[in-house]
Length: 119
Image 1: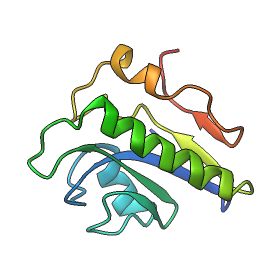
Image 2 (image 1 turned 180 degrees about the vertical axis):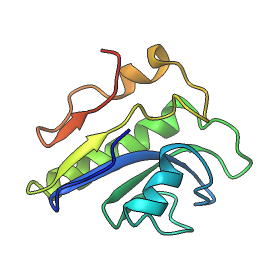
Image 3 (image 1 turned 135 degrees about the vertical axis):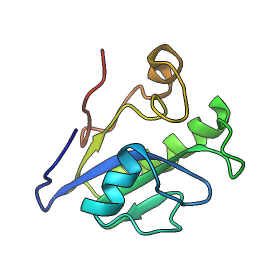
Image 4 (image 1 turned 180 degrees about the horizontal axis):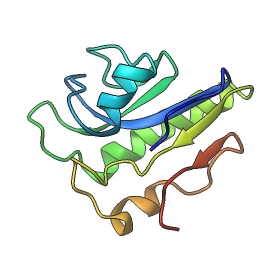
């Protein structure tokens, strides 16, 4: 669990399409790192919201995760002065396994660092 960030760091956490941050890393980011209520995707405070659940709180498909990944990568490339700390997206409340989501996050931009992953 990440408890502190430097001013140039952004934590990337799994969210839902409602932007309700009631559990997991999203709840912590809402409390500690400025993730605003209602934000489902993108930067908010020192957080990048990455949606892993649909509005009905069901898993988003891998193709949807890949589209969100592409937006995350675009954001990271546009903000090279920031370091994005990528938590194990989708492996908590969303219920994905590491084996399912690890292939989604390949070819990371240099300013995205995996934190807490098994690989």
